[in-house]
Image 1 (cartoon, one colour):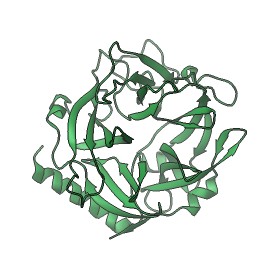
Image 2 (cartoon, helix red, strand yellow; image 1 turned 90 degrees about the vertical axis):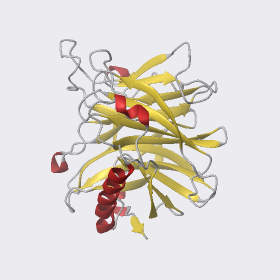
Image 3 (cartoon, one colour; image 1 turned 180 degrees about the horizontal axis):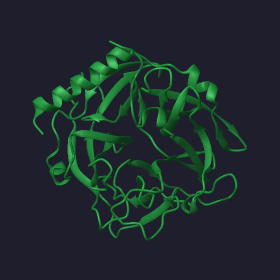
Image 4 (cartoon, one colour; image 1 turned 45 degrees about the horizontal axis):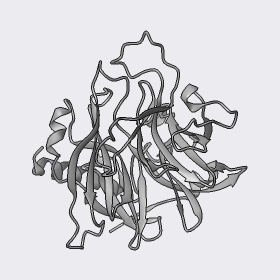
Length: 334
């Protein structure tokens, strides 16, 4: 895709954000460094922001000014990149991103690296390394979008991902973090019921996506989103969680049901003020845990707004409240 078209898309996207004053995002992920907090989200070329307090955010533009060449293989991809994850290791930042044809598992996950996130630094340069995982209709019963990275208890690094179809997958990465390790190791960590008689090209039923695994205390927690985003007042997104003492599961909910068998305990969901809440990421900064999500504002045209919610713990289970959705309000600054 030509740079001029990408820039035009970005300007339209950012103009909508500027008019809204709050930060309008889908699928937020964050990282903290000495400059503060950086937030990445779905958008033209992957949109990102900088903040020193997690409330006032300055738009940094897009990671990509033109589409990587490998994305030409994703038929129907329109340049709108989805659901990234940002991961720091080996003295650099790894940004995993999704490309897809909407509603199909004609999808792929790529990775781009940078030594710094500071745009004023002479070292600031994103280098794309191509596709990591790809899904192909009628070959794969998974959808290669929504990546999230976790290092396990043995020091190995895994990428979890998935949306609808047969649910959430994990695959082990090699030491470069740029490709799948060989011999390949795969896991299925969360599913919802789906008949074997349904065509492999059909996404539904089984509305599950957006995995994020993080460790707190003795447990690894797997968060996923159930039901539907992106439908305005019909959005039914909710975040559910399970936990395991291994990064690769099995992840059990509060009732002891395996998430790979349909289990999951609801952590946060929509209400009269927020039509749907989902696609979360999870962090612990300075001893405080946070859940970052987007939520559809019932009082403002169903706009998907950034929410960063402090998490408390009850019997080693995360707890957030509906009140916190109202209390947090981001501010987009010039």
